[in-house]
Length: 419
Image 1 (cartoon, rainbow, N blue to C red):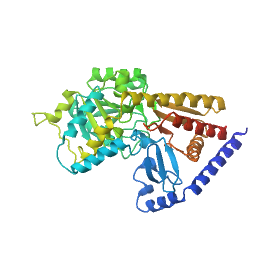
Image 2: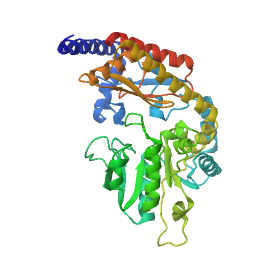
Image 3: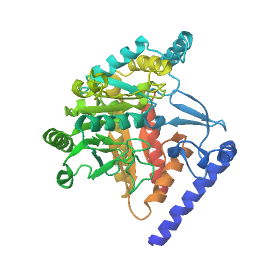
Image 4: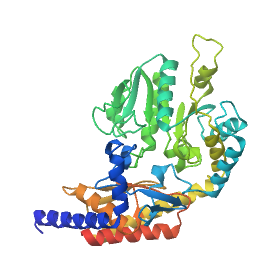
């Protein structure tokens, strides 16, 4: 087929999908128009910005979201991994009711604070002690600051396509929203190119799997190299496990038995409420409890220990068993295997899936990759399935084998339409 004709046909299919989407969601369109008048881009969360307009959700239950147009979708976004419990889980609902009965805006310490810390320290191998904050962005910000104070150095190694929060994003070149640290850009999964850059570093900040960067897992060889290099040079090795702690009961550090000096977590561990935490070895974290006031570190935040997050997180932790995480990972691995078989059988060569366990990414190559990605997104919506538009899929506890079958059926429909 003439490449120009093929591209034109693919674009025509995308146009038809978008037109059907617009016709099916008139109330979402009106809600978006209203939002645009008061919110830049119609949202306060850039990842949700979506042309011609995003779905506007009215309610959510289990693995299902319902839009303001009354349409239901099986949700495979799972709030970009934070919604591992599904929506409105009854155990977490009851915990929030308990928080309401206790009183809120307490402004003091409760026993739930220590209970949650004990849970995290039991799960994350590198954590002797931990401190709470309100997001993964905050956790990484504080972890960097802690490492700089501890080492008395200023350079921070990060990696291409890394994402550690709204002010620590390295998917593009110069990001004007990034914090003004002295960053050294390593090459993810490339020991040869990264090795010469490791000198006089305060910290090495790395995701064991790049989530926003396309669900790209770090190899154990690369992580072992970073562990050894940090030990030899005195840098603090920080694993950003804000997303990846859901991929093993002890995080990916436990899965690979490669233990960093500090770890940051967040997202789902807050039970659906704003949450972040950073922790590590006692020799580092005890700087927040030093009797020497000249070197003691100060870290505060009005909502660091807010009662809603503390109660929800403690209750939610009981849902995250090793067995449930293993079940989700098995389903994710199963999906990737079967989806790759469907792709090979279809003859479509410009599509592949990546990830680890329940974290799944879809990628397209070739001159029409962007159009293919858009067709995939709108085809799945047409089949009643919601994913992250960039090709992000995250399983949650409410998904079943039947959910995976429905997702695979939608992939088949897409392949039939584009091959």
